Length: 139
Image 1 (cartoon, one colour):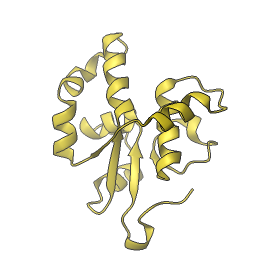
Image 2 (tube, one colour):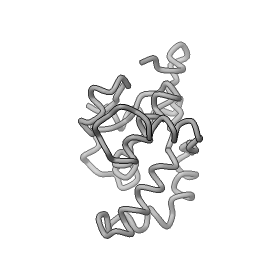
Image 3 (cartoon, one colour):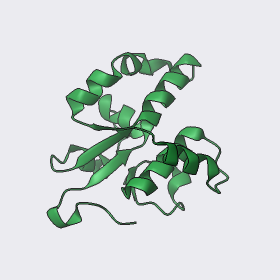
């Protein structure tokens, strides 16, 4: 897949939810290549509305208790990080629901639909994206 902004050195990229959390919590599991792409001041870092939805859902269900401060402060953290919010469009929602992909996770399906729609690489360590016709930044 193409990477927008390549002529100027700037890249638009979309963060998977775990990459976002690990960035905000300075988690060592975020590899150097992903960290460098996020930190590069010329890059535009997109954060999907699906990530806010995923964090809130998993926290509510008790599956990710430690993200409570991130759920509560999501909008402020997004602003302070200078990340660009990426809303979910009806077309992206339709494509996420209709895509022929055995993976059932609705959050991953939405992120994949958005990465494809925006023609941006996905910053993710999740192996499910490896054969999905989308560029992945990780290691």
